[in-house]
Image 1: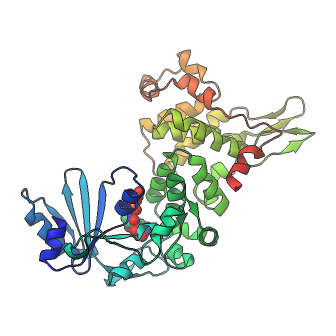
Image 2 (image 1 turned 60 degrees about the vertical axis):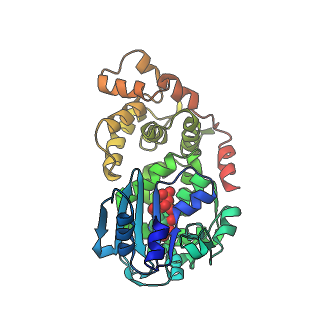
Image 3 (image 1 turned 30 degrees about the vertical axis):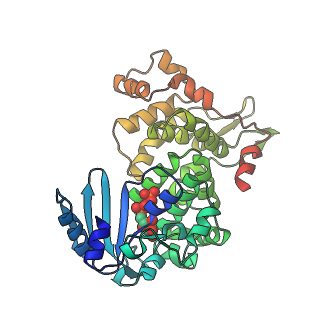
Length: 378
Ligand code: CTP
């Protein structure tokens, strides 16, 4: 239908972005489809709706020059090809009409610039001026423009790069990784909600540690989750060392991933030792202790959720309880957790939580913290 509408209006029209990328990667069905028309995207959306029997409603966003059409669980966004220029203090660009190539050029990564033609004359052709297909094959995250420009224009893209690298198991090209490190402070102009969105997506991957290690390597992590960075490192006093709780945490998050897709359980794994930095002490007789870290951790979860704009409801309580029992999961079995709502949530999470945390506790030894760290430097 879009193809017919485009030909009727004589508009060069393409599907672009995530839908094409995921189609070529054979990655399930992408529910959001981005359509670019060289001309008016709004006119095209209206025409498509007219051609459909049930004439679905077209939502027009005049200010953005875009239109959205919902059909079942598909969300199709129509936009006119555009050229963008950014000012330093905003991620909202100044927009003007442009060619398809201008539109591809304004996008974040070459793998997201692939344009699949919908017109009868060349239906199914892929227009790929930035070698996105090559990068898709060699599993590389690369920006179409100089990465310093792409990341400075829209700093959210730094997190998107890391998120795509984690989700797709791709490598961020070294030039891009350096640019992220250079531009990291620009993350400050991004809203907490968007940052948290990307963190959630990283947490829900098969190997979240890839993303957190990249956040750490680029210096973004201390700007986003300083409480996690604070867990890094090993101190030695009188020949006694403790484990590196940062790398330990990443290992726990990976360990828990195959057991559950529950976002909140994954947050709990990420935060399970969060109270250890502020409670760390060395005692002459007993060595290193983190006494009371579970309670400290539960308090920190509240603050952290608030900062990250995560919901301060049962989900937070659930994560708090899991943090509280992370070192002694047995409390659930002993029925010491009296809050029945939380207990229900814990059991609803599906797996045997009381075993889960013990099962997933990683065994980075005091002496050999580099085992896991090394994996991330390869
Ligand atoms: N895009 C961009 N810069 C951003 C966000 C999006 O250039 N900060 C472009 C990319 O070309 C992207 C397209 O807009 O492919 C659609 O964005 P979005 O729907 O957010 O992401 P997808 O690529 O579709 O991937 P996902 O749905 O996994 O987030």
